[in-house]
Length: 632
Image (cartoon, rainbow, N blue to C red):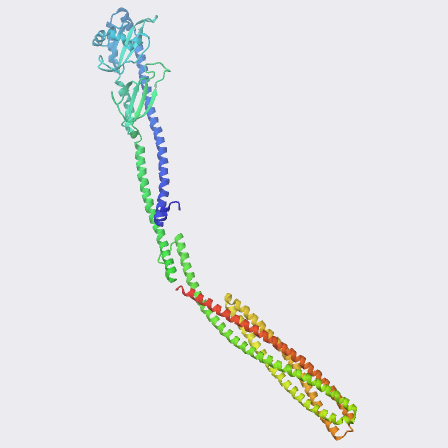
């Protein structure tokens, strides 16, 4: 954060400060810009007004000076005045000058001088007598000197003339002789300078209407000498003034060439509206900023209250795990209302999720418990099947040994039959030995019949065991099918158990196929044993008959030889059947051994299934703990 101090403020105070700044800075900038523009406009307006007043005073003064100079020159061309200067007779000129003074109210006096400065005639006798005593001063006066040079000057306008008892504008013009233009004398017309105050009264009145009470007009010579000040003689002000001047040019020669006409006013008074407007704007800006701060505070309060309510509910949910708490606030249509609505939807979704999770964990727990029970039952069944297979394997081993012994006996019988045949061919002398051999053969055939009968019983027992194994495999197949169905019900959590169930079902199918093959082999073996038993019984009967015939008579020796040959052939058949039985029993033993290995694998798979069910039970317990963490 660029300003760390702002990080310690609350959101309400920061928002209030930001809104106040955002509203204050543009307002102050706009106020400054407006004040700058207004000041510039007011300055131009004041300057224009002052310039207009200065130019107006200049024009009035120019017009007045020109008019009075022209009037004085026209008077100087009067024949009465020329005649008075030539004849030195002032009777007519006095009457004329007195008449002019009465006619022109702005004229304080008019005097006719000779070329050497002697007052010859005047508008009043007193005025003539006064100038008569000042002939030397008249000759040195600037206005007299300039008039002799045929120029007009306004020198002495600032002085209070003792003769006229006030400020006058002395305009002196030469009196020239008609035709020759020879200078005869000088005519002095003293105009009242105080009339200038009357001339500027309209300008002062206009300024007063504008509220410029300090407005003043001044007339200055080029050297800075003040000729007129509307504030009065000797007015002095140390304060800075706004001044606009207009200068009388020299384009047209007159007595006011080079004069400076100034219009001035106090800046504070001239810019008083701007200062008042600035104070008003600043006051309004302060009020606006205060209103903006108050409004932003109220706005922030409106923002913070629902946010604080949401925060309290969220903290309560985080600390207590209680999803049942309601939001104590009104939901509006603005963004905060949308946020509150979304929060309410989130709380409802969390409550629904927690409820669903509780229900799912209960169902999953029941399913896992059922799966464990089923797995334990199947493990017990498979253990019993394994024990039965072990017994079957032992029995198959015994059958194998018996079959091997029967094969050896069959070989022995075959050898005996061969010897008996040799003995029968040898003659009658060997008959007794043959009788003994036949007797032994009869006994061996009886034993072999017993062995074959036992072998038949063993084969039937193996068939029963095989049927039991098939039933167990069918039961395993059904259990695997049920486990697969429960795994599908369990969803994602039962996928691993479903794989195990499919493997168990595959092993059960293989067991069923193997037992069917064993049953087929046992069937073939039983048929062969039955055939051997029948042949053995027939051989036993024939041996008995042969013994009876040999005992009854030795004449039947040839027949006995034939019988012995038949017996030898039967014995060979028995030997072949016993060999086939031995091969079948070996296959049965191999199948039972394979079935035992498969049962071991099935037991290992069931153990893995039990372990997976135990882990699934642990996960279920964890899910139950998570689900119980929230109250709904």
